[in-house]
Length: 242
Image 1 (cartoon, rainbow, N blue to C red):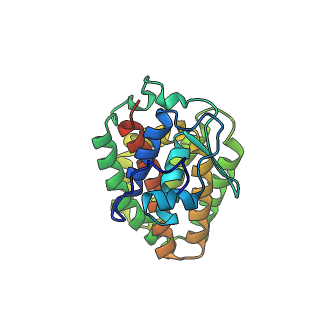
Image 2: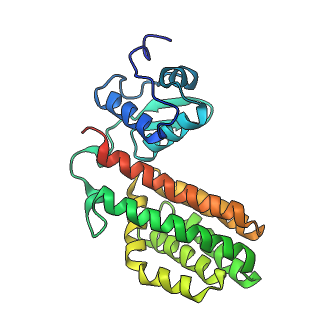
């Protein structure tokens, strides 16, 4: 183990990747590595934490999601050049009804349970017209990633509601309508994060492909991955040292 990882505390294999992300966040806040500096290699970090690459990568993705590091494809991870504005003490993500880690966790948990199954039903039951609507929404999302307005957020919600329509289950569709305001707020919060829009677009595009393939299992997995990305990032924002 090299000197840049020697004092990191190993973590149990049973520990969630969030705990690794939190320890790395603490090291970043303590300025262990300078802005723009490359982090130790994945191999060194895996050895330091005594975890596999998949667990470490989830931790790094979480830190990238909230703007603490930048991940370059095939080029490693780097400390962000500037401090993320979501770490500056103003807590812009705590506004609204969904304003604590507990409430966010509960809301995300409910979405994970329900929307994953809605996606599975949509993959089985959606019509050609339903897929056409979803395709149009995702294409519009691609065009609005950089516009800086509310259009992308509105389309994000519209996409989830269209999946519910495609499930052909009136009760589940009405349930989403019932929590529509909370859904919009959670989507708005997720898109405030540095990688929010780009990640949301990529994940929605991937989900659409699984739906069109009529693959319920992959559709459910895709929804869970999409929702958990934000959930992990938000937990770190609340828990990491300021």
